[in-house]
Amino acid sequence: MKILIVDDSGVQRKMIMKIIQEAGFSQPVLEASNGQEAVQVLGTNFQDIGLILCDWNMPVMSGIDFVEGVGKVPQLSKIPIVMVTTEGTESRIKEARSKYPTLVGYVTKPFTADQLRNTISPFIK
Ligand SMILES: [Mg+2]
Image (cartoon, rainbow, N blue to C red; front, side, top):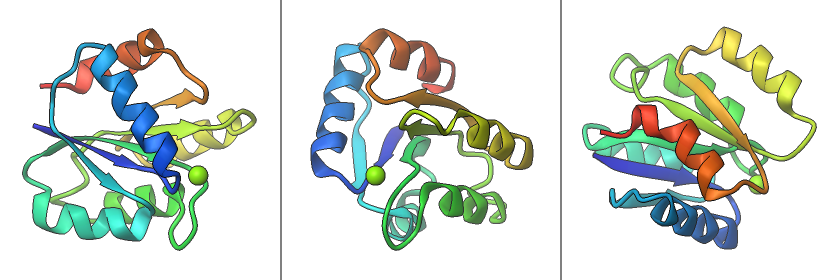
C-alpha cells in the first residue's frame, strides 16, 4: 500500500512525509501539488494507493473539489481521504464529511506525529 500526499506546498509535503515516518509508518509516499495532479497520479496508481492526505486550499483544484471528484468514480471512491486543514475549516470539514463518505477524517495544521498516527492508523494496511 502507498500513501498519496496532496499539497501545493512542497515544504508542507516534506513535513507531512517526515511526520508519517516519525509516526512509525514506512509505506511508500507519492506526491501531488493539487487536486488535478492527484487525479493524474491516481489514474496510474489507484490500485496501490490505500490512503490520501489532502490539503484543502490549493490552486487549480482544491481539496474539496478533489474529494467530490474522487467520490464520483467507483474505483476511487473506496480510498480513504484525510483532509489536512488550517484552523477555521472544521465546520466546513464536518459539512463535507456528511456529503462525501470517502472523507474519513481530518488533521489541523500544525499537527504532531501522535495526532497524525491516531488519525491515519485505522486506514494503514
Ligand atoms: Mg495549501
